Image 1 (cartoon, helix red, strand yellow):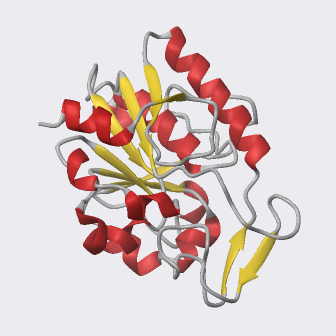
Image 2: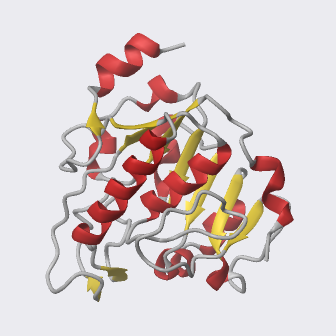
Length: 232
């Protein structure tokens, strides 16, 4: 069933450029003042960096159950458009700024119409790419997607990080006794490759401006060079 609440977002940003701000440690090396004039999609616990990183997103996405459960109060306080997994509707109810998205689609699918839902694809960044496509963005630039994690065990297993979190821009992100789900980099890369194919087939592009990022799927651009040249 279509969710008509989403209709006003369709192609709202046609032919514009967006920034997806992921949550890797490289954000602490990134001058985010350079992107403040762009529409920004923030992910997961990005609110932990608002004061130090100096920006605020226009859109926000979270689909991981642990992230949403751990961040209920912070997510509810966000003053931006929020896309939250429908699974967590009891934790984060819909309101004027909060939209529930169906995340039950099968693997190996890129969903162009988020009225129907999105595919999680192993990473909230993939969810954000589907949202950005629906919003009509022609170019999406990703920052803070380090794609480089220190963890023990197998992908997708749930573990507790007892000390500081080494994998995100804040040591408190999943650190000091919080649970997290081990990343599945292989699944993420397959999802990213599909996103790139869909974007390019439609004359759009995804650029990776992450400082020191390890992902090899998207075209790389130098962060400082790209944004200082395009800064406005």
